Length: 280
Image 1 (cartoon, rainbow, N blue to C red):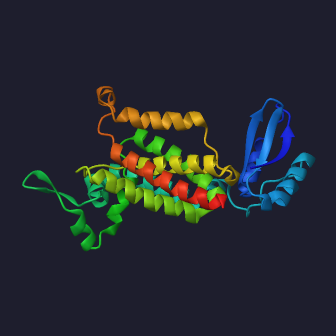
Image 2: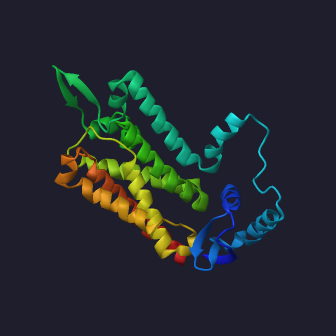
């Protein structure tokens, strides 16, 4: 990271922060004893940042111009322009959740890692190899879009948006898509390897994003990634907690722990690889 400027503690920099992200300029603000410090991730964006900073100091409009459209359409389309892969994954998850409440088990059976049906009054499960041989390759990823409750959905989407938008802003949609696909499939296969079939959720991808962003911030700080240390402690602590008997005792049983762990391993591996490349 490259130190750019120091602002007094009382300076309201919210508009500047929003504009920098809107212009896809990777940056970070830190609170120091002497004030707020603005850091730049990519030195090639120095001139663009300074132009925005000068206009902001003059009180000029610094948010990018948008085509004239209704306020509702503009606000709905903004996430897809800023972080298209993350926003699309979020939208698919919301759509699937809504369809589950309308169509019920039909949707679940279509998206579980293996086909699920009822035979002679009992649940019957197909095999993954048969599903893949018959062309149902989507089942490797689709469980990530299944959520079985509002809290499950809300928390997974919160972390997906928090980390995913950071990845897309700093490294592009291609990198985010790669993490989503590799971590989604890896987490699902890790959970399936335990013999579990009826599982779902984006949490495996979320833990992959946590591992990726954390390693990038530690091993390649010039990349612009940042995650609060307390958030890392909280999420890892939560993962460990859900693996204990105490979690089931207080109502947090049936958690896809292997998917969480598998996603985290994938994210750490990708973070180690790409942070190593960034350091060369």
